[in-house]
Length: 146
Ligand SMILES: [Zn+2]
Image (cartoon, rainbow, N blue to C red; front, side, top):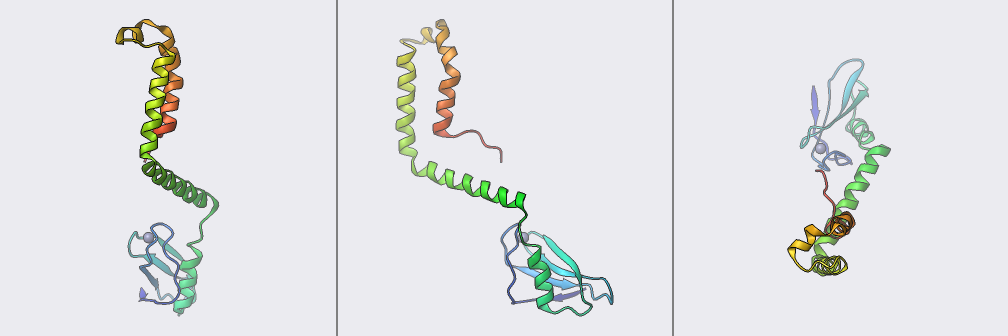
């Protein structure tokens, strides 16, 4: 295997965003596999190259493997949206507390909860609880996997 350290235009790794990419090829006389490998996450993008490929040729193989397909684009978009939502959530922590407090007071008033016992005695409290929980989740955010 011939390793080529390259400073030519190489796209960052689509998996981890690192630009520490190792270009290499196997030095076979035919069907010579070559391309790049991310030094950070190990993502490999290779294809058959000529028997003595230039850095540009190897970089092209690596680069063509860094294009995102539609499902990967979608995932990336969703990730960005999630991050954005998280940022907004942090900046509006104060608003959140005000909204939450108002929502709780409204629920207690609407359901005429005057003491602990009335929560258990009145069916309307448990009937209205799911909607209340939904409103709480809209304010504080839903559970997210990962
Ligand atoms: Zn990587």
